[in-house]
Amino acid sequence: MAPAKILVVDDDPAVRNLIQRFLIKQNYQVEAAEDGKTALTLFEQFNPDLVILDVNLPDVTGFNLCQEMQSRNGVFVLMLTSRADEADKIRGFAKGADDYLTKPFGLGELEVRVGAILRRQRVITNAEQKRLVFEKLMIDPVRREVALNNQPVPLTALEFDLLHFLASHPGRVWRRAELIQEVWDYEYVGDQRVVDVHIGQIRKKIEIDASQPALIQTVRGVGYKFESPAHPQQLEAKS
Image (tube, rainbow, N blue to C red; front, side, top):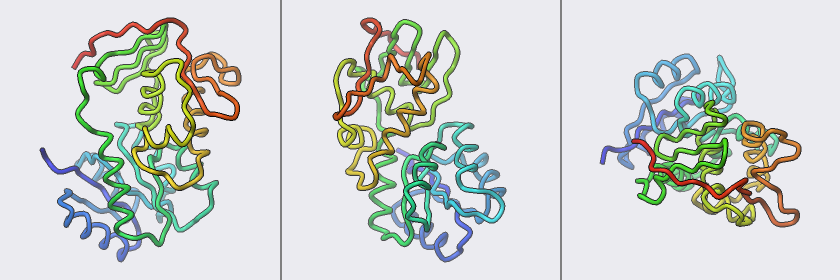
């Protein structure tokens, strides 16, 4: 199996070089960029599995660059910031980031976060290859595509993972901490409101009325559940 490809984007050469050297030692293929323009060029050429992206760049904000990259192929994004402000993190997650690291951070923590994100690219089992169809909503885990009324729904990588997980267990109520454990794939120590942000983003894209959601319902004091409008039809996904 080929090593994962990681693009590091940070305008601080000391941080950029440290991360690049460390990840190469972990047997990843790594490219690095110091600004948004270079990052986008490398992104097209290198086609990374994961982008480690600083929020503050000289020519573009990391938030906008994250959104631009996400719109192209749903790449995983780990954002770096010197700000501990939760509002920044919420904004980053809304733009499609998969995770956040606040500077300064330890290389051991970086290794855990990178490994957890990349594990979501695991081999899909036969059971998970089934397309889920709920009336007008279709979720295809192989192509990682969602369609509503036969129209494609643009989701970030994490939004897709969260929707597919909830829809795979219709009617079951999940606490935020459980969803973080199952979808993020490790113990997330930050603000659990990140789940609410992603749920809100998904609702805007698949619900008729996001203020009165029918598919992803809030269970007060507990968490969320996916409520099927009808029993799902499971179809073999096309590879």
